[in-house]
Length: 425
Ligand code: GLU
Image (cartoon, rainbow, N blue to C red; front, side, top):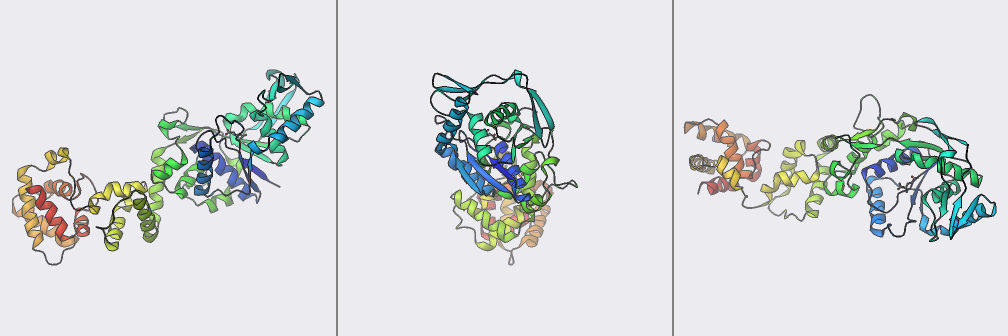
């Protein structure tokens, strides 16, 4: 029976590294029809915080990693104490004040069987005696980790490579307790693109921050999978369901994985492009509501057109409003910088002419707007190319964006005409 666990300490938010560990455990459990345990390692009463624990549980749910069992180490102190006392009684541990310490037996070859790294060998002579229970009565991390993994019958310990150095100590604790050692899989480190350890600066922010930035769970999970594993055939975009069918711990890389924000943005954009418009509309509306955007000036038909026009360039949900804010207000704000760059007096005169010409159009749509624009600009002796930017700035307050004439059509005749006139005053 396969049983794995994800064992976060609620001393911080769930970060990319932790989420990747959770995912690989979860995928392994589901692939093997095993059990996935979530164990909150909250023995450090000073540093463990309720808000971190809540955020971890919320993020796990958001990512879709459901668990079969949930345990809290803070509720298991009696169990740890009992086993520490057993080791005392058996003469394998000793007391130093209130602390209980395991004697290390020297000259033992400790072998770790690691599914990713094969065999790793340590010499027990390199290990110091191990604190099991601290003098304040709380258990030490390695001790409760071993007691729990054994009593919870964890078959495979899948965790970050940074825990390799704890593994020989933990094996010595298993041996002292007379318990069977589980199999291990130490996942490769995740580094930033600059080759340094993942930090806040290069992407190691909380999972909830990615949610707040407008990444969607499916694409973040898909990206996490790629940090050390690949579905094969150079395939990158895959569903969790399909990945579970293919997932094998043995195929996880030894080499460090590189976290690339650009790649994550690219993947998120792929998800938006392939998403049904109705679904995208729904999640974008939720995003705008969360951001307290007043949506009264945009009706459903306009909203749909905006989504169709912009979805190709969205890397995050938040990008949508950053690009389309001009459509949700009556008057667009134009920075002084863009005004002086594109809206000199002679340019504004032509924009005013364009406003007059557009005002006279009966059927106002993208293709009519385009031909009126060309006619007006060219009949005044200018080239259309030179007026694309000024018109775009006048209508949207931005230098770049998708098809200008579709934007005109979405804004409608009245707003288009008034914005072109407005800058010309
Ligand atoms: N609580 C440990 C941590 O957050 C995990 C320990 C383990 O997976 O063995 O790093």
